[in-house]
Image 1 (cartoon, rainbow, N blue to C red):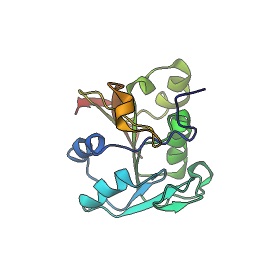
Image 2 (image 1 turned 180 degrees about the vertical axis):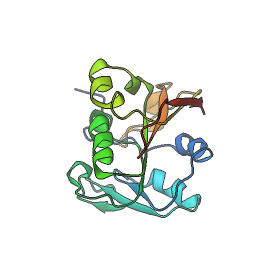
Image 3 (image 1 turned 135 degrees about the horizontal axis):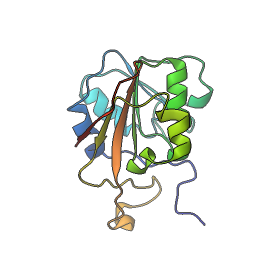
Image 4 (image 1 turned 90 degrees about the vertical axis):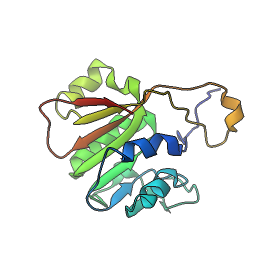
Length: 174
């Protein structure tokens, strides 16, 4: 039996998005392709952004039944999301293939590791910026109570890609 949610549904706490939005600005609509219960979209809207909200599953928010990996065109020029970690690299590659202008992904810091990922992604399309949380974040399974987690915190970062390949990747801390 695994402790992971079968669909990797871990609603994003506001504390994981607000500091990021203090540093990144977006032009145009923002697509949240795994919108879940709308946690990220709610904060984006508070900051004045229009969101396009889709998800494969029906979590009571957005348009369900939309598999991001099967999309044929971008629904907005920007993406901001906390993707299912097991599909994160495929999601990033899909955003690149769709020509998304700016796409931002909340991922574990460990996403930086791996020779296969380096060869398939980073060597061809490195992120332009990475914002590392100086305070570890807790992602709580959608079907668990916060008290169940105790101090189960992990190192996370926001990874930002644009449609231009940077000379170097900037790293900063939140």
